[in-house]
Every structure is written in C-alpha cells, then in structure tokens.
Image (tube, rainbow, N blue to C red):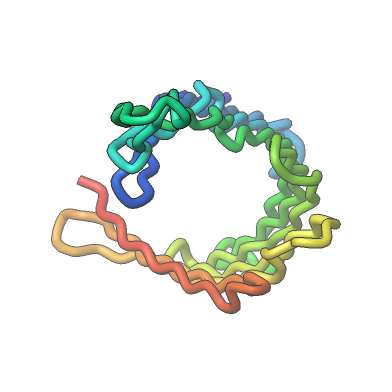
Length: 190
C-alpha cells in the first residue's frame, strides 16, 4: 500500500502584503486485489491559518480628532485570519485492458469535499497506449451556483532523451467565467 506525505510552505502575496503558512498533504492507495480495483484517500492542505501583513496595511490614525493640534500616529490595520482550502478526497478506480496488453483503460470516480465549497463527484477515464501515449477526459459534477470547472480533457506522452525519461502533459478545462484553461507540463526523471 503506497502512502505519501508531503510538507509544503505556502506564500500568497497581493501588492506589498503577504501571508505565509505551512501545510501537510497525506495520501494512500490500496490495491484491493480484484481485477485492478484500487481505493485511494487523500487529505490536502491540512495546516495553519494565514494572515496578511506588510507595508500595505500601514495607515495613519488620529486617536483624538477633536483635541486640536494632535498629530496622527502610525498604525497597522488588522486582517482576519483565513483557513487554507483543506480538501478530502476518496476515490475508487478500475483498470482493465480491453484490447490486449497494448492499450489499458482506467476509470475513476472521486468524491471531493473542501472546507470552502460544496461536495463534488468527479468522474474520469484515461486510456494508455503502449505506455507511451495517454488520452484523458473527466467531468466535475459539483452542484453549486458558482461552479467553475466542468468538462476537461487532455493528452500525455512519455519519451526518452538519452538515459532520461521525460513526460509531456496537456490538459484543457472548461472553467466557466474564466473560459478555457490550458495547462502544460514537462517532467524529467533522473
């Protein structure tokens, strides 16, 4: 049963203000042992609340405006702490090879709950062709008025560069008001 834990430092900045925090991600995958059926669980962004600070919060304050000739003093505005978007995921996947060993298909159903959004059921599938080319599609079924994500699709490619293995991934997501989101990633294993 592969498990993974990662610790990360998160920093957010707006103009000349910033907030920092530390978070932990925990995850595990369990192979049920029945025809490629796997169960996965993940908890992401378990960590401290964040609060903005910085020069943008500096202001002038006059404690005695009716007292006449009293100079204002420097003061810092106090910001409200906010939690990280902690996310819980529970997924079930099934992999099979309908066309022999050269093409594998994996389907997945994932339940997602975050502390700042409604629950969602995410469904997806991936087809792997000869461990080189990947085709992916999915849909986020979250039922809320301000839903952004919808249909997504993508492709992936594994390749060799000398003694190194590389990957290329592209994903398209229909993101509502933000329209189409395109993501690209490259990776190399040493």
